[in-house]
Image (cartoon, rainbow, N blue to C red):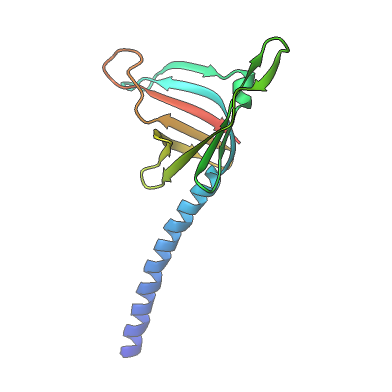
Length: 152
């Protein structure tokens, strides 16, 4: 009888530890997917009232070349590129910005130096960031949703 109780107790203990490890593994996978170089290619604004598209645009060639890099030391680096109209080439604008970031996997909030975003989608190749507190663009009394789309 004592052997049976011991086996049941160990089984319960191991299964509860397994769930905790699964959550940690999931959080680690999300963080690992975030790490790397991303390029923003599209922005879409959706109505907060009925989710219809209010505005959608592809970013320019140089905006797409801008680098959004997340490193595993909780540093975010932004390298902005703009068009040099005299050479018709993209060129780096200013210096590389280095900012701290924090990601909360429970709330799916990404905070980049105080600017907050919902991490709506994250895969090895695609990411969608929704501005945390976007304004009412179409004046219908509901805050609208602005989502930026990124690719690795």
